[in-house]
Amino acid sequence: WISPRLPPSIVLVVSKYQTGVSNMDVDTVASSAAAAPDAAPRPHTSSSSPSLPVHHVDPVDRISTVDYRLQQDDTTTQDDGQDTTIDDTRAAAGGCCPRLVNEFKSTGPGFFGIEEPNGTNIDVEATFAPHPVKRKLMIRVLFFTATFVTIARTYFVSYEAENTYKFISQLSHWSLLFCSLYQIAAAICTAFRSTLIQPEPDEPQTPRFFTRIMWGLYSLATPTALIVTVLYWSVVYDKGRVDVSMENLMAHGGVLLLMRIDGLIIAHIPIRMKQILYLYIVTVAFIVWTVIDDYVVTGNDDEKDAIDNVFSWKTEPMWAALWTAVTLLAIVPAAYYVIWLASLWS
Image (tube, rainbow, N blue to C red; front, side):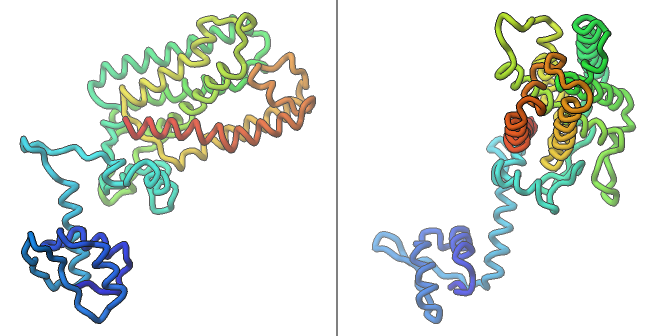
């Protein structure tokens, strides 16, 4: 009752969902169809249950029926009549791993595409700057103020504004800069609602330019802050030798917490896997900078931040090369994957 030309996987799916044959042995049917293609298989019967009628339906119609039923399953309702919210990740993409692969494909969401795997589009306003506007704007301004004060105190107090080069050459300060730029863009998008207009169906399915700037900065600043925080407390921190001041805590974890609250609770900003390119560009730029810093500018490890000391190209080139490989192949993908998973939950 089913064409032997169909792949076994299609045979199993069709036989599972076909009307009137739910009690049939799927393995028996599949093996029978492969062993005797010209013979008409019989439905499985037992003494306790009568024979079930066989519906002679073309295999193409069977597959269409299955597709229709799967669509019906995706739009089921609860017993109280309210619509059931479908999790885009599991229902549409089959889990995190299939969605991860789909986002890397050329047919998946673009760098700033608002399309979701289930065929719907995200609501730009509710995603990046939801209501109530005044409350969200106030919180974002406060977050930026905290980040800006951290940068100012680090520059004027810790470095006494005497060594600007040393200040701007450290990864933790790059992270603070990216976070502050994001917070400025987020506050602007929250205040000026024209940046959050939903694209029309006949337009490219991407947000307005300034919203894309905000989105790109978030996908860059958040994993960078996570990398800085993890490396600092796992590799750099030495109890008794490192001053645990307020600006130090904010630079290595506090601002990261503010970014996570902003992206997951205040807003619901998605992360596209293709946006990892921005993180790789900044990471490679920083590694190139450490080489220039060693061989051209100073070459003095005493002038470096503790995180930067792992890239001592002049004194320990093999160690620096090893750290470069670990950073590019493990640390960057792992940090970005954690941020991406959190955005799926949000």
